[in-house]
Amino acid sequence: GELLVTKTEKEWVNPQYWSWENAKLYDAEFTLKNAAGDILDTLVQPFGFAHYAQAGNEWTLNGVRVRYRADSWVMGAYDNNTVNFFDDNYWYAKISEAQTAHVQMIRPHETYLPERVMSIADEKGFLINFQMAYTQKNNPYDLSPTSPLWANWGAHIQRLTRQYRNHPSVA
Image (cartoon, rainbow, N blue to C red; front, side, top):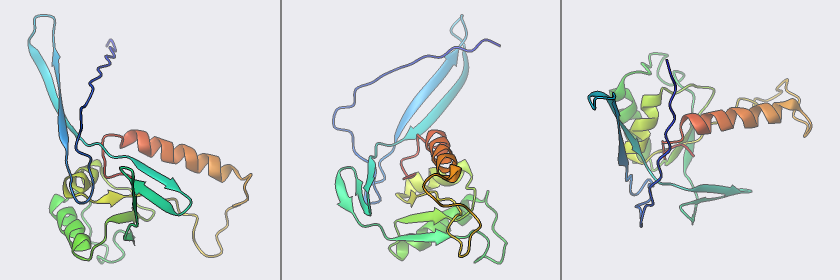
């Protein structure tokens, strides 16, 4: 029942940056041992190096200005509501279909995506950009600069960023 937190740092010399052109992933392996040195558990966590920045309507990925080709996915609406969100084959096919159309990023509109989808996007070099559902025509929300909506939205994005911090596909 005791919580032990350990921090490890490693300097990376010339890491390969993740992008849709080069979906380079690294593996960090964690091993938990008891006092006798017996292995109790092992976890391999894939991760990638990527840096996103946005200023106005300009984006950079790893320091290079980019113009994303993006799409908004409303899950189920185009699949006759038959989507099995936990079927890896569905996601591999869906992302491959988008990449064939030269789409590099999606916004999952009002949709939760399972963690496994982020991993598939990492592997395939496909970006995911979360949004909030305030864009409806005639929406009832107070969108004034002083509205609490903005603070709540910021907190929500920070939670998602922390939750998916090891996924370079999350922009």
